[in-house]
Image (cartoon, rainbow, N blue to C red; front, side, top):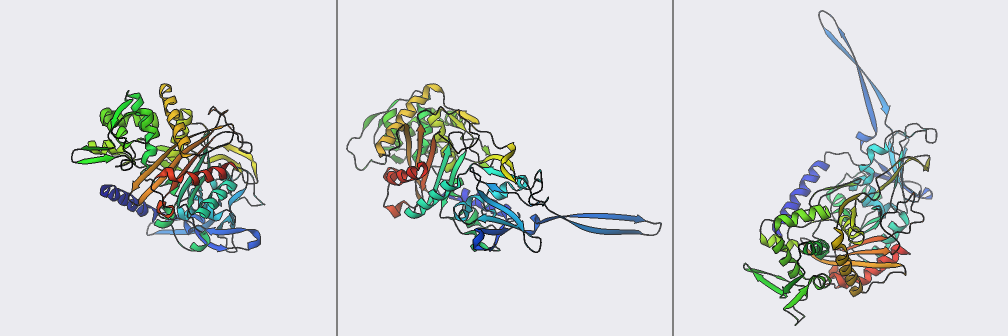
Length: 492
């Protein structure tokens, strides 16, 4: 863990070193409350572009240079819309001609660590696209850029944020549709961007307690066993002895229930190992499979080792294996294994349908005058990047059905529920996860949607709790009632 902390600290330091050289937006002021917006102004480097023309005259005795500077107004960023056409952010100029970035007051907190520049959010990520001139003038102005319609549902984003705030779930929640589009990406706590007037991007807003936890890496705990189950099946490891506590090389691995059951040792089936979340079973399985095959299978089947390039950024998972102990502990999402809740959503989608698709947030590039007028399509839906071999899919689904049944979560008629819980020991304390899929029984995973107003597909819902002691939780399975509330919020 000490090595992991050092690596993470070094990575964070490098990130912030780069961030300090970038131009980032800052809150300027809260405008008239009747208009229900707040204002954000970017740094001077994004306000305008300056064009310098030089005229050079040369004589036999001297060289004379005359410089004339002409200020050319920059193209202001266009709008960010949600999936239903609600404006999330837009630009206007103040009395001095300075660009102000405006946001809807009803959305500003729930979206702050996802969209805002001071959190290195999507408004910064999509800056260049938003500054491409709109095809036609906007309110008589020809210096406003085209707009982006995101896949987020603002109403659901707010509802999930309010639910997390009301229950004090410190952590994150991700809701993904079947096609890979992110419906909600919530981090709690967030912040009121109006408070940070004049402040540049800093560690806490970008990557710390107020950062986007859905995109921050941490140990995933037993949610990793979704992959371990498939690898065990692929390599024919379907039965092993489980001692409850496995001693080897002067150390040991224990199961979560090793202190409160008298059943050990047991001959454990692969299904039993998954449903009962046996650390020892999967540690032994990885030990038998070996480092090279584990890494190769994780990448080819689950795209875990190679980066996943998404429109909102790159998912960088981490797995490092320096010894056999690392290999064994990787099997249950510890040691040097790191990933983010957005990846867990992609993994959950693959578990339910057999294929992993790239997560995305850009639905369309649209005319700033009319969200319904599409300039070009955004990111590809159902972009398959990895697949579970067909012969190993049903056993995994059976196991995830068993977990879902054991934790007592219910879903509406016409839907099935698959899940895996995970309790992770991280350098910040224990994190609890539930990776769940509320699958529409009629959904085969191939549908595409012109819009999401009548979406009838499935929902991959990830809940991460970073403050389990507040609830007196020791294990992720104890958080099922909170997860039930999250499902109810999403489906309401």
